[in-house]
Length: 301
Image (tube, rainbow, N blue to C red; front, side, top):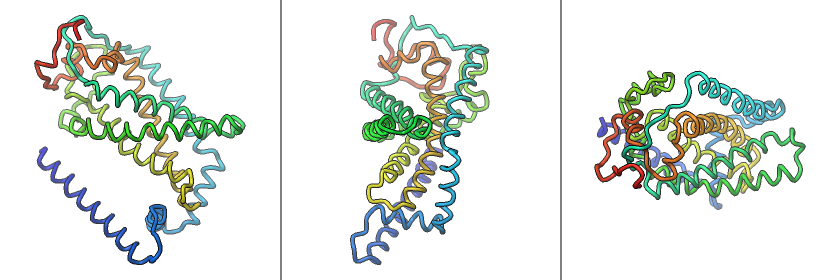
């Protein structure tokens, strides 16, 4: 199965490289002048949308009715309420932290994750302020939020690429992920039964494949929104993509925060030390095959 998956990924990558190369080659051949990335992006979106005037109408409708602001407001209100209900009814999972500890996150992974977590949190907060700029009256406060947003994006870029590399193999789909989804990882039950998951469960993989590729798209569209050589219509459709995808990312981000801070008692400690208690691993990552060298006695890591 892994061999088939690798073959599909290789074929898909080859097709994408061929299409991009063909598109760029055609563009350069047709234009005697310098053909910029913005030009190529504009032509590509033009082919996809067909009629820029319709894109302008859609953008005006969404922006004029403050769709983005209300969409984000709905997400940051409803999702925390759902998780608050889960915490009150089901409660957090507690594991024995006094036994053996298993290395899950090496130092490099922890540093990259910390940079990613910090920058993404700043992006979410500053982004929500920007999209709600009219509510806050605009001015210097929102202008400052924009600069924070840009700075956070520059900080997030290397973290996104780093996480793409270090966790790519462990985040590939597996059959056990289907079983995990059917029982929602056991988080609807108070019992501590072994859950079918490897080093990362299906929920973590969903967050990864949303946040990493999605983060790259957000970086590209955010760059275009700032208007570095992009045309107005390119900025409009980039704004639509940026905000709609942003809603998805914020929803997953809130879920990730809840699972990391509240749903599993003491789980933040693992991102600080890199170790998870053996009891937690045997329950929540029952299929994870770790090395004996990764195991240390409790309190000695």
